[in-house]
Length: 610
Image (tube, rainbow, N blue to C red; front, side, top):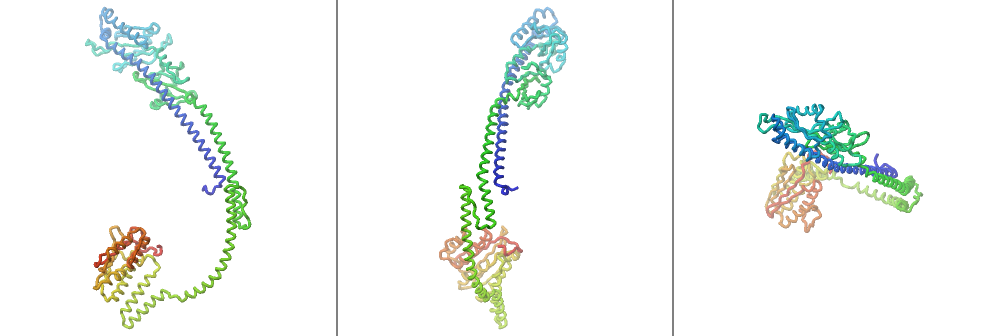
């Protein structure tokens, strides 16, 4: 339905409803954008906190890797793993290895115990009494054997998964690195033993607990099997972490929402550099991220409701004060449309609608007076025009019909032939042909007809001047069926004869040619060897032809020749545009050349269309 057909009242209500909807959309967009911005800032903050925690853990793991690497590459440690002399082991390499392990454990508080054993099963250790017993149970031996049999252990030390002590219920994990003999003995470049470092889980737990994100947020350190090593949540849910961490890694780095126990949680993950597959995981309730928006949301809702109510009240006010007087005006105008001439519109208000009603009433009064005057005037005019028409009818009956004129010329031609005057017969015949062509109603004619008119005119000129001039016509055959405006060449030829050739004492020649130029336009060239024009006269004529509106230019002392050429030039420019028309070139005592350019107009068009 077009809006112009909808009532003004309905359009106003539609405008109010659309404004309310746009306002609500903007309000929701504001909440959505602000919520996303808040979450992005929270994600950035939590990323920074997680990054700090990750760096601390990587630093601890890196210290363990470096100190262990120093130990396993020590000469005395390697001798301890290969020497068979019990005395040397007991009094030389053994004490050094024990001192080195004690130093490592005292230097790094995250190390609870260190055990070095060779492939023969002999061992030396430095342990805390509270957690060292696990090294001497069968469960540890079977647990660590799996890592010792791993071929990839030779290239790089590894952090193990969690080993739970069945007797005490405690959980431990270790860092194990092989001892590869490189001192040039019998076992050169072979694994001769292993160094196992027990990591202090309590210290790792304290490192995580010191990181605070939000009140109910949770931070986890998980190994490559998604086992929770340390967490701020005592009830660490391993299965839950596996479900969450199975998602796309890139999404987890940027933060991804997950629903846990019916609550939206923002989960972020960062991998550890010093432990392959180990990660730091944070879980932050989304509600805590957007808690600061709750007061703002309430205020915005109250403001939004107030604006909506204000818009409705304002709309109702406009409806009452605008549409009501307009509807009354429309009803009164309908009564006026039923030609109740004595009725006038009621002025109900003093605003613009009231002014409009007064103007309409005044207009109706004036229209009634004008109608009365028109009726009286028409009656008088009718009486006077009736007599005038009768006189005009009588005058028209006496007018000479054009057909009667050229029929009379044909009759004169026949009489001339009968009495042997061929010149009279030929002149009257050509005149009748030219006259009949000139009164043709068509604006566009075939070039063939224009050429026939020129030929008829040339015959008259040759008879009149007794063949004093040589007149020639050379128009390409392909142009004859094209169309051209009527009577554009004959006046130019006439100008060339009367203003050029006629003023010469001796005879001259005149040539009319027609062809297509390189752009496909039709070009006629009328060249004579007549008197030509003075340079000043030629310059003035060319200036007029080159002016955008040639008929308005200053034509001081115009010549008949110039006026005729300007008329043809203006006619062609009005028909076809600025690119078409006449150009004139002349030289005193040498002659004049007039070029006519028109577009190529195929034949068969409606001549009356122009």
